[in-house]
Amino acid sequence: MKVNKISAAAVLVLAAALSGCMDNPKYQDGDSRRLHIYNWTYYTPHSVIEKFEAEYGAEVVYDEFASNEEMYAKLQAGGSGYDIIFPSGDYVSIMISQDMLEKIDKSKLPNLINVDPLVLSKAVYDPDMNFSVPYYWGAAGIAVNTAKVPRFEKSWAIFGRADLRGRMTMLDDMREVFGDALAHLGYSVNTGDPQELARALDLVNGAWKPNLTKFDAEAFGKGYANGDFWVVQGYAEVIFEEIAGDPELTANTAFFIPPQGGPAYIDSMCVLKGAKNLDLAYAFIDFIHRPEIYAEFTDFFGFPATVNSKAAPLKKRPPFYTVEDLANTELKDDLGEALEMYNAAWETVKVGY
Image (cartoon, rainbow, N blue to C red; front, side, top):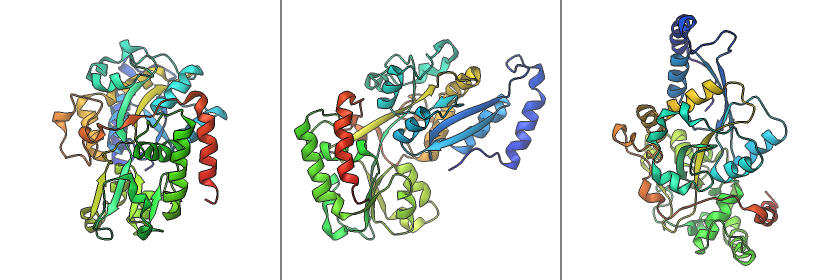
């Protein structure tokens, strides 16, 4: 869902907004008013981008990534020019340690008072929002086509069903897949115990992988929508966006987060070190946490208002899952020295794919 193009109607609104900018002290001569954002695919509604652009007389240039690893690799390889990035908590921790993020000037963010203390208590990597502002707390789950799979257990064990072989996918995401297996076995998704990870690896390679068509972090929604796959691990917002034009499939789709838990994430808004448009970056972060804007954001994707507590009463549609469904999930932490062990295990999973 690219949102770096402005509709004709938005251009008219933007032109009107720009006409009054010369007399507004917040717009400075020579300022390009161009905000560069690097964010997840399917993650900021076009309507929110347009409202921000119109109000601030700015253009948002929006690039997308499909995984933390992809985002981090691009930045490490010299990808620059971004003002705001949206890493998950474990990568916020890594980037703080590597001095990749600007320290947040909270005096420019009055709407931080709307961030739920519950989320900050979970954001142990940066609980005081010194380098990151929570954007969304959520988790991947499982979508099932109930017309094709009328009986199933709400468990990660569904990927062990040989009768569904060739009709299932899991995310091409090491932490998600191993996290699911570890949670299913009763272990922490952040375990550093080699024996526990070995058991999770055996479960993935021995019981789940033989039934999967592929590991896929980008096209799982499309594959589910066109009927190639009946069971997919993925994000609710991606799946329901893809099937929105098919009322029958929408009605026959069950989405759940297994009650035994699994990996959760807090994606945050961070200002990249050396960002050229700091004032505009702060304006965008604060804009997102206006309760009415956060309600619009979460309504668009069918999210619960997990981060902004004052947005919940303003929501106009029920979410695809609830805050209560996240109760048994566990945030993915920076694995530290154990990361090498996980990477080696993941290489054995990806052999043949």
